[in-house]
Length: 260
Image 1 (spheres, rainbow, N blue to C red):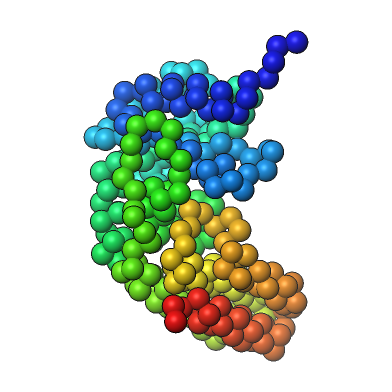
Image 2 (cartoon, rainbow, N blue to C red):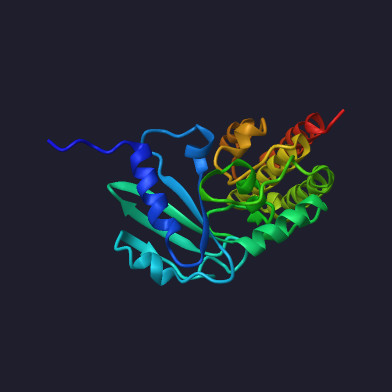
């Protein structure tokens, strides 16, 4: 029987083919496999860094099974498109990364500036410094990418107030707008949004990079939100109490994460 190629052999071949595409300056491995937290069934997250322009048709022409999206199809922001493919029997996610945009957001993050952009599958959207986090943690397979030296001190100062402000406002509205009506789903959703925002605040205060929302609550010490949500019922008093408990839990987590 033919031998099954090793993961490293697969990665080498795939990186070579991606790096040879017109306009591609670098290929990186991201996600759990770059951070050593993968499971046996984890997919492979690969980013193509291009300068100037990239034609997804060149990726499609490689003939790999799956869906190749156009530039901008995922919202047109810093996370501007990619592909879901099967390569040698392995699930591979491809992300397009404009090098000029990455360099710009790196400079912005170092100055403490960022935006939050909507993106499918992300409960509170993504901060534009997410692609800076990728530069910091991804494994470069081919070419070269800029890399932040440290978590920018200015970002550690500016990001937590933004995220806590959104969390506080979300829960405040849930308290007066949804809880008195017994709107269980909306209060639960508000708690989930606020907790995710608070988790971003915690991680920024610690100076720890975040590349997606998977496991974010647990990393930030906010796994207790799950138990709180399971206790909510569609009665105004219970929902008001739940909002109060969430406010206290999030405030403690953020306070503990602030530098001494």
